[in-house]
Image (tube, rainbow, N blue to C red; front, side):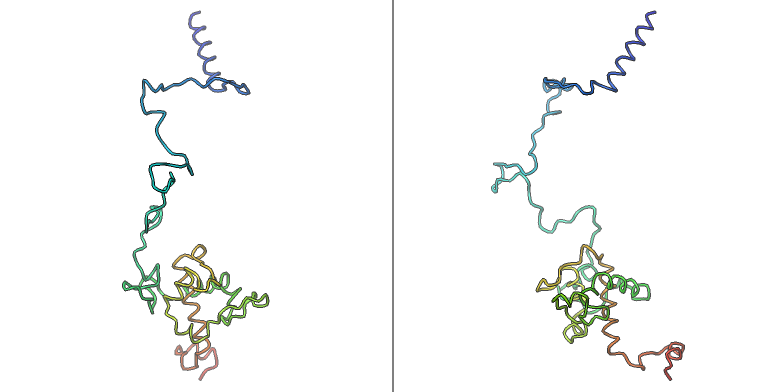
Length: 214
């Protein structure tokens, strides 16, 4: 009989532990399982709440600004200036593509896809500045201007990353990964080349025949 009482008591305790007193309102503080006198520093630790003030720092803020040039630990190390900033070690814009970028049909197809999504509405599908926004008074630059033809590849990459100096074009770094930005640069160069190409540029015999070039 004693075991019956023990089992019954255990079931009552288990039921209360799992279900609790749902719907009840208590006016007293909950039981302190880890009292401060027995476990000092375990429960009540000094801290600042977000956006609170602090007399310890000169600016009076508890929240501290990030240190200069800090990089989130979740991001990979981007030490290749040419790949991720479009510049060489001296800080000048690179005039060629980074070593890690392989210009092939796959890259060009990716660049065309990204270009038509993000660039064509302003610059036009042909890169001539006749995008759909032109009829609304937004004048985008033509990639066929001599200034942009002579612009370094790294500077075009930098413009995609940080926006134009006039800020008429904003940054697309949140929409295009660095590799995709270089793919767009490659496609822009292809658009520029298309206006200057001649029959002599086609060297593949099969392609020449398909185009009717003799």
